[in-house]
Length: 243
Length: 243
DNA sequence: TTTCTTAAAGTAAAAAGTACTATAAGTTTT
DNA sequence: AAAACTTATAGTACTTTTTACTTTAAGAAA
Image (tube, rainbow over all chains, first blue to last red; front, side, top):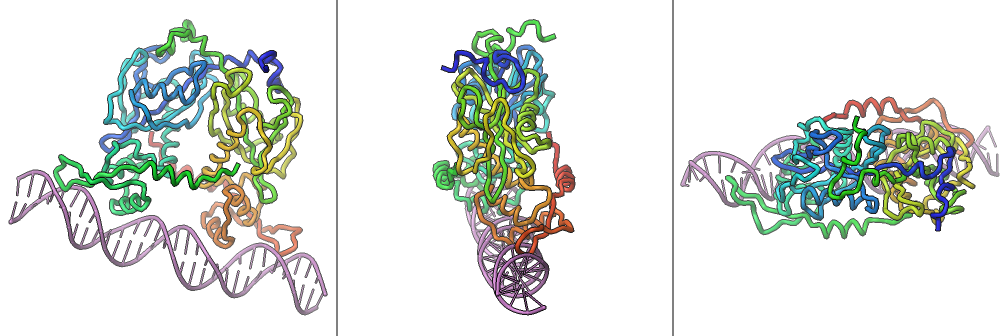
């Protein structure tokens, strides 16, 4: 119904026809975080196509004409890691006029958290190589990807202080010291062990299992898992839909 | 240099030529918050053009082909309020396939905070009317603007807890009780007056002036202003550029 | 059985947050 | 001009949370 004469829409102060505005490219780029050996890592690909061929970059792709934004991010993640049900979140959109050498391409930044032990990322047609990099030892990146990674990290650090997402970087069963390591890597801080333990347990969101770690040269620690149901239930109750 | 054959770029798993991906429209939409009479308000326009003509909506416009995203938001804000140096921030991008009746238009959501007393918003060619609405008494909105407003409010509420942006809703000189009113409206909570005062002053970010309010039927309160320089300086020192 | 390493519990001081009371300083009313 | 009233501002006592540190326990390895 509205399709008849689109040129009459959006005529703010300029007189360009509507069709002149439909020349944007859209992409999604994903900053994939992992955790291993007490350090925070980012998954990068080595580009197999121009522009920035051979450069390292964060994985991304153009949004399909008939694809939702989150679906696009899911597709990239799925494709690269082979995993489903990955935690991810949109955090910022980057659209400086000349950010892309080919044309006006605006990219939507997502970050995601994955358990690095579960899988091996695989290179594909569009990536010569895929590798985990320590967050403090990143190579030079193509496009404006350094800015994107930096901003992703900023968002992640804020988020992790208010919502229990640290678990997403660990296997389902983890020890409290492992969890502490995640938070220390993420926030670049040190915590006191007994106090960290006390605080985490007092939140009542992780449940002790009847299992302990194995193959360690010392007293094995108890394993826990995150009680997502309880968290979701609690969150639901607190939400007040004021609008 | 890279412009010669764009069709070889971004060929992930599909075989569409690059030009097929350049048919997105981009817009920015601004959720403008104000504060008056102890209540939080949103500035809405009544649309003067299709689609959703006559409906209330948040102000927005298509991004110009040669315009940065933030510039686009600035332009809309400037145009509508006549004010410069308005606080604003990008918060989320909305791009569901069918969100826009005319075509695939992706919109970048911004929210901003303005001092409502400083100015009167003016309607223009693209808006029949402009009006402030109480956040709890919004009319039905066109497009997906209800979702956008809701999400903006969510972001604002988080932001206001970690950064001193409440001042942006008040005139340069304000009383502590006025500031308390802003926070109560923003967070939908009540604070104890002496404690709020103590907490705010202990942050050492607002400075007392040698002025008091006038034309009040009781003991006039002291006026304060926000010490932005001190805040910026302090923030600068804390930032550790770890990337 | 001894030694080693880390888990896990406990304790005490400091800081921050909460609830409330009291006083001071203006304006308005009588 | 004094009294009544309203709100600003200061102060106090109490509770809870955070921080720093000590102690004990449990298992693995030698």
